[in-house]
Image (spheres, rainbow, N blue to C red):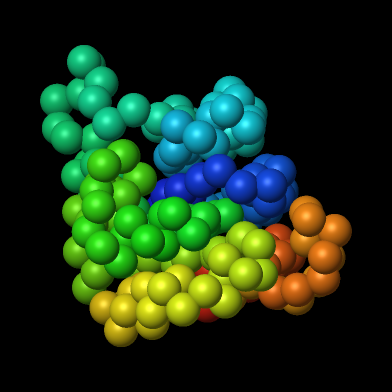
Length: 180
């Protein structure tokens, strides 16, 4: 049976890497539905992910044609929710219960006994190392969220440090491990 994955796409320079991730997951036989945050849609058109996922891309909390709340139907459908790139802002929202958009509401509506949540952070080194970010990450891990932590390398700011999104291959390998 095919597994269902919701890809939550947040705003970050690593957003371009999500295209290859969606393609790889489709090649591996997964059903994919994408949720994009408002700021993510300013970086990349939802139409791109619609083509790659071969499904509707969700960007709004409410749709006049939905008969069931979108966040509930998406969380019930998903075997796994992957947030990639996962921004510092999204980690903070999830750790503090700030459910103000479709992505955060979908994650909070998920039954963590049935649906796993994988966060793949990507951000500036100082943001990643910040004590509040690390406190939030530890809290989310304690709750049961999975993390594929950022790697060291050259960042957008031209500095080297921890904050790079892991490769598509590493993310796909981790997803397969979670969905066994």
